[in-house]
Image (cartoon, rainbow, N blue to C red; front, side):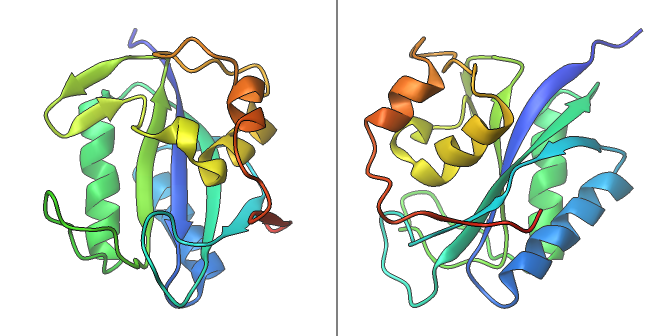
Length: 167
């Protein structure tokens, strides 16, 4: 029997109907056979490390899968492409996007191979990742840093984040 992996995926959008974009991404994931176990609230935040007119809506979902992290990443990139996201080149600055799908944590795996970096880089600096993740798992510990999520959140500025209760 295949091993079941607990995975947290971050979703974000700051173009078009942002909430609908995320809901459509949920549907695509389910169509690919991924069971969404839990969903955080939606969080509104300004863009991170770039300027844009529109704020982001971000959320985290928990799925269980027997797929490898590499196959899951390939499916996430396929969904982004299908939904109209333009691929960012290496070294190119961040920009607005219709949908962003990231593997935040894959069963606590630490990996830095090619396009797959686990846990997702910079999550300890991102309130739009840690706040919704804390909603789903307040006992989560950063696999690489070995720091509890509560400690990571307490080090962040939370003045620019607010919850929109749609799930």
